[in-house]
Image 1 (cartoon, rainbow, N blue to C red):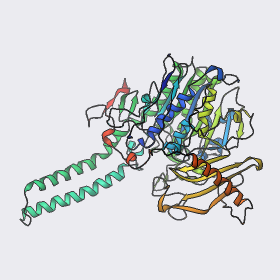
Image 2 (cartoon, rainbow, N blue to C red):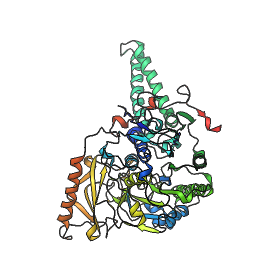
Image 3 (tube, helix red, strand yellow):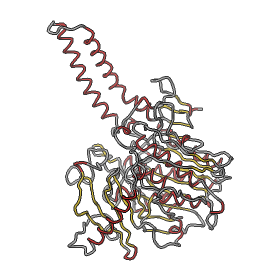
Image 4 (tube, rainbow, N blue to C red):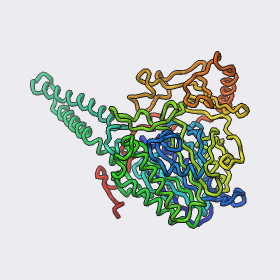
Amino acid sequence: WGLVIHRSARSPTLWLPQVASHQESYVSLGSLYFRSCLAATLGVLLSLTPATCRDIPGSRPNMLLLMADDLGIGDVGCYGNSTIRTPNIDRLAEDGVMLTQHISAASVCTPSRAAFLTGRYPVRSGWSFFITNHVPWFLTTAAQRKWHLGLNCESSWDHCHHPLRHGFGHFYGMPFSMMGDCARWELSEKRVALERELSLCLHAVASAALMLAAGKLTRLIRLPWTPVIWSAVAAILLFTATRLLGTLIVHADCFLMRDHSIMEQPMRLPRTTSLLLHEVASFLKRNKQRPFLLLVSFLHVHTPLVTTEHFLGKSLHGLYGDNVEEMDWMVGQILDTLDKEGLTNNTLVYFTSDNGGSLESQHGNHQYGGWNGIYKGGKGMGGWEGGIRVPGIFRWPGVLPAGRVVAEPTSLMDVFPTVVQLGGGQVPQDRVIDGWDLLPLLLGTAQHSDHEFLLHYCETALHAARWHQRDRGRVWKVHYTTPEFQPAGASACYGRGVCPCFGEEVTHHHPPLLFDLSRDPSESHVLTPATEPLFYEVVGRVQQAVEAQQRALRPAPLQLDTPHNTWKPWLQPCCGPFPLCWCHGEDD
C-alpha cells in the first residue's frame, strides 16, 4: 500500500533520521532505504525557497507520482501494446510527454525505489541512507499503497523504520510488499520454502522420537523417558508449525496501518482497491487549497495479482491482463478526481513502473508476469533492457507540450532533482546526486539528456553500462556480466524467483558484450571488433567512466545481505496479544 503524510503549519524543522543497526526481516532488505529515501525526496523537495522557484507558469505545481509494481513496458498501449486496454495511461501520454528510454536504477523493486526517491544509485548507500530534511509548512505530502522498506528493529513495536520516524506526518497503507503468500497463492515468496524446511526437520525429529520410543519399549536403549517425551513434543510442535505457517505469514506480513496503528490484520484483499481510491480522493479534497505531493505506489501488477470481480476475465491475457486493466482504471479514477476538484491544470502527473515485468512469474502453463516488448530480459536480470526500461510519462497541462515524445536516455533518478527544482528547492550539496532535472528536456528547451553514462548494477555488482554518444546520435550498451538463463536456450531464469547477480550462474564477458541500442534496442546482435570499427573506442570510453564512478564510491553498510534478508516473525507487529493478530478497524 503506501502512506499519507501531512505537515502542519509550523516553522521548517531540521530532521536527521537515525539509521538503526538492524533491519526488519524480509522487507527490511530495502525498507530502511526506501523509508529514508522517500523522506529524502519529500524532505529535500520540500526544502522550498520561494526565491528559487522556476520562472514558468504555475512554477510550484502540485505533484502526483504514480508508480506501478513490476509493470512491463510492453503492457501499455502507448508503448505498443494493442491487446491490453490502458486508455487512461494512454491519455496521459497524449496530453503530456512520453519518455521512450526511461531507465530504472535497478531491475528489482527496493533498490529501484530507493534510487527513485533519492536521485542516487542505490549502491552509493548500500540501500541505507542518512538524510538531512528541511521540511517547510507549505507543502503537504502523501504516498499511498506499497511501502516495502521495513518497520521494526529490535521489537515488534519500535517502528524504527516507520514513515513517521523518517519525516512524514501521516501514514496509510501496507508497510511491506504485496506477496503471493498474502493470498496463499501458488507462487510463494517464502511459505513453500519454509514449509519444506520445517517438514524436513519434522521428519528427522519424528523419526528420532519413534526410534527412542521403540528402543525404550524393547529395552534395547537404556535411557529415561524424558528425552523420548521431549522429542515427541518437539515433533508435535513442528507438525503444528508446518500446518499453521501459512496463516502466520498472512497475519504477520499482510496488514494495513494508519500512522502507528494497525487497522486491518490480516488485510481483506478484495477491499484494497476501494480503500486506496477512497484515501487518494480524501487526500486530494482535503489539500486542494495548498501545494501537495502525492505518491501512489500501486500493489498492481505484482503477484498475487489481486483483482476485483468486475475486471476478472475481461482481458485477453488472463489474470495478469485483468490486473493491468484494473490498474489503468484506477489511474483514470484518480485523474477524474483531479478534474472534479479543479486540480488538473496545476498538477504535474508522472507515471512509471519500478522495474520491468517478471518473466519467472509463471506456474504451469500460466504466465503471471509482464511483457517487456521487444526488450530482452526482465525483472531481476541485471543490465538487460527488459528489466530496466520502464514507462515514463509526465503531464502538466499548459506547461508541458502535449504529445511530445523524448527518446533520450533518462532515469527514474531524475525525478528527485526535477521535483526539487519544481518546488523551488536545491538538491543536497553534501552528496553525489546522480539524477538530473528533466524539465528542460520535457519542455523542449534542451535537445539532449544530461546523462552521458548510465550504469546498471545487480545488487553491488556492475553488470552493464550505457554511453550516450551525443555527437553521433548513438547509444552504446556494454555488458560485463550476464545471468545464465535456465534451462539452456530459455529467456529467463525459470525455477528461480529472479536471476542471480553473482556466483557460478552468471557469465563474465572478456571482452564485454557490446550493443548499439540506437539501432538494436532489443540487444539481439552482439558487436565485435570484426563487425564494429569503434569497438575498442567505445569499450574503452565506457570503462573510463565506470572506473571514475567506482573510485568515487564510498563503502556503505549493506541492507540486502543475508542477515538483513532473513524473515523474523517476532519483529512483525500484532494488533492483539500474540498470536491473536486479528482486527478490522477499517470497518469503522
